[in-house]
Amino acid sequence: KIVIADNCAEYANTIFNNSNDYSGSTLLLGTLFFTFQIYGDFSGYSDIAIGTSRLFGIDIMRNFNFPYFSRDIAEFWRRWHISLTTWFRDYIYIPLGGSKGSKLTVIRNTFIIFLISGFWHGANWTFIIWGALNALYFLPLLLTNNNRKNIEIVAKSKSLPTLTEFLSMLLTFSLTVIAWVFFRAESVSHAVSILSEVFSFSLLTIPKFPGIYSSIVTIILIVVFIVIEWIGREQQYAIETIGLRWKRWVRYSFYYAILFVIFWFGGTEQQFIYFQF
Image 1: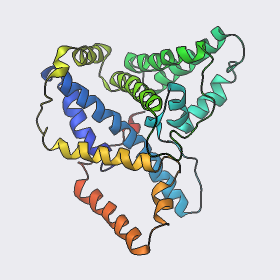
Image 2: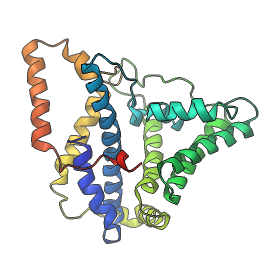
Image 3: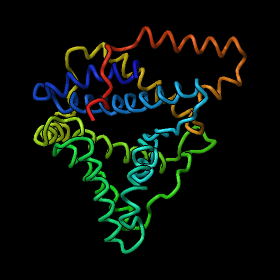
Image 4: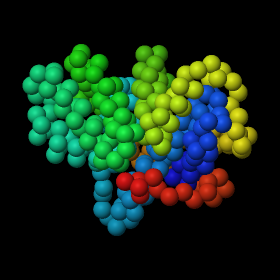
């Protein structure tokens, strides 16, 4: 939340609020900043609640399960905001008939769920289109009966994914990033303007905006964050579990290093995104 989300928020806000001043490459960078801002913000919000509850001996379900390592959109939504998606599944999707019935019925139910999810986030067409896009992403899976039912650990017990796994993750991540543009934009026209610029030749220019050089630190932190996520993707409390294998002085040195990073690289305090919903 402090190191990733808050730092990303500074640059994402600058770029989105002044999108007409920037080229496609800079807008793409801003979109990527928001992609990790919303993950760090939502997941951080949940992890704070989970950690605080554990201090009192209360276990709360995990809410995010390494979603950006998903290989298709169905897997993404089984890893992203699990408490909300589970509620929608149990109280809306299943009562509508769930995955039973014809393909047309399943497609209808999927669209209803995502449109409601979009409307739940806000009475704005940007959220509705965000939901509709995610429903559209599901279509190939539903039409081919390839809707991933279980969550398998990607590249389990391996250091690197296969080429197929990597390309699947890259495609899913890219589609998710496009949808996030509508989630973050002030209006549909604003989102379309940003995406039009991103998919233009200006994407080939060098990103440039106030603070671009200081943002390199944030980019490095994001890369480190991704590496840590990848290393710990097979367990919920990866740092805690892996740390128990180390000698005490190594473990505590690592913990103090994390505290140092938080205090030294923590961004300007930002309100939790979820407070607006």
